[in-house]
Image (cartoon, rainbow, N blue to C red; front, top):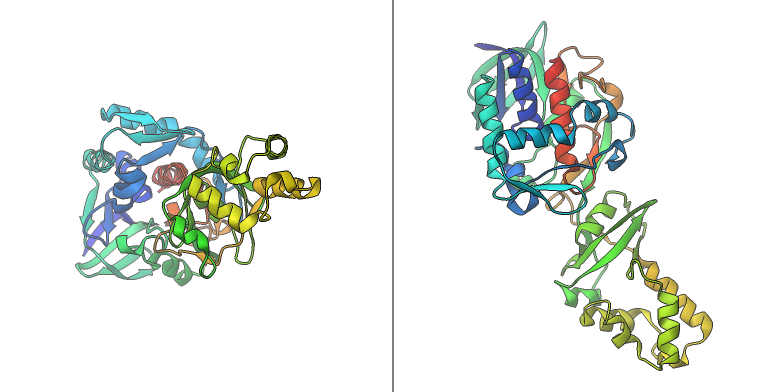
Length: 387
């Protein structure tokens, strides 16, 4: 039976950062990954270029039942700390938009960097190891397919339920319940929203346009993409984390423009609505939207009240989704281990000494755009400093 100071469950962003930080402090660390290789979500992120952080990350960019919980960890390991690590390894990167940092090359460079740091810190990394049982007496005892292991501290970095094709499971949640921890209900986040029934917009799959998507007080100005299943694109993915069943997402289809004077001028010039809107949208979308949402008559025949109502609809088009595409395509899982169970400084369970939860398994979820990686780095670093 092998014994370690620390065993970390999960070879994703949070687990790797925790392992590196603890290893650099001289701890004997073993990282276990149940998949066949490390960092699969890192590998596919950012279209294969890894949106590894966001320079604008603040606690306001995260959803949690306790929005203040993430403040301590984020303050002690900042986006600039991770950027410094990237630069130290000579990895070229660029800012795409809104503070988002991407590799110029491949996301595999980030994985290679993290594994190199693990090796330098003396961290043991084992893949293809499934943990079958965890018990705690004076120390933690893990029964795995490869034999029994023991450790003084156990760090759970097993992620959420999103992208099960990459190996996501509910193991971390089951472990939390086993030790009596309270949980916040989980749901898919940063996920496409689906149409109701045979929506004619399905025929516009592939059409994209800039919008402002609003839901539950949050607003995101980015692109919206129509798919054959529903609405996607960054603006919709962002709004999806705030959406609840039965609610609407309000979409401003003319962001940064005033619809009413635009329509009034077109009415005076005796212009038609579709050609007018086609100057701002893809024509296919203008035709389909006008057929669905506008009175079937010429603009010159609109009364003032009708024109005002149309202008309001252009800035607040209500979309009522049937639901979401679920965990299969969700980028993150909302909810998880209740933050009231954890120390915000160390990520250690208040009621179970030596047990830590970090990353996506915790009820802290970031916006789209590198924020979830930053939470992984920060929470992993916080636990690695304390464990």
